[in-house]
Picture 1 (cartoon, rainbow, N blue to C red):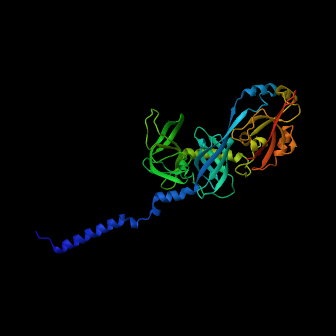
Picture 2 (picture 1 turned 180 degrees about the vertical axis):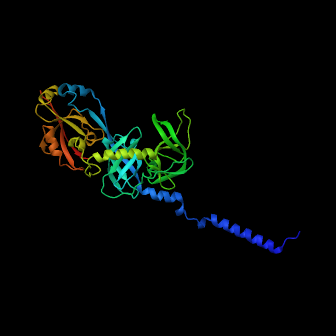
Length: 388
């Protein structure tokens, strides 16, 4: 049977047209990444994602045999033990949930909040002070607020994700301290109960999107920008010690929403704190300790006699902070300060009054040593220390 030549030409043109249409659909030069759903979702929520930097001072007491000696005269409650002060920092993420600057994050990101300085950096690079309101160890959720009077972008908790298995999810946050980092995966499971580092977590959602250190407290969203949950934990090993890959867990959005409703009730009962600088004065630390790392004690008659020091002269040094200006100058506990600058000092109050107006970076001379009774032995040295 013969085929009509015109039919062949028509079929050839049709195949060519279909091929051109297919190539046009996959031509990268014609695609616009800005229209991708994931890109749009990230652009929608990222302005509300914050990096949280917490700082707290840890004081560790170090016992010294001479403490027992001092305790005989002052009692255990009056002698301050020698302390080593360390500043610990941690990084995490969070997100703003309303225009007033309220933020939800993990409780373990801002644990021991009474001892913390909390700094929040928004996606536009601005850093604010924040204060802790309340939290719940059981759900591992916490509520903090930015100390600023401005309107902030936020992620709504009114319309949350349905959390369907297999749906695309995006993790946003401060991964390994880089900030404004995202990862993408799918929702792998719901209602997972796990144990990580001896901490039990219940009813979590599971995802294979990468959750790294620093992501804790950040949002997990769907392609519509709705909240799936809050990044909480990554399982590197099973309880049996088997290594895992791609197993991250988040606190589901409905738990976050219910917890925030309770947190807001607590916030309404709290007075609004006054705005304070990031590092305000620590009134619990004396000027001598803050500036030079010295802990001091008045030399009363009983203690002077016990130590063999001349009565009524000087102030006893009971502790020297390691790596402080006093430590670098070679000052040791048990010595006595007799002069501060050009003034004789015979009480802690006198030294504190003299140091009250000393700014950081100022050099101050101290006459330090020991004047003993009996033979009136004098071993004194004048040392110059720079206030830190």
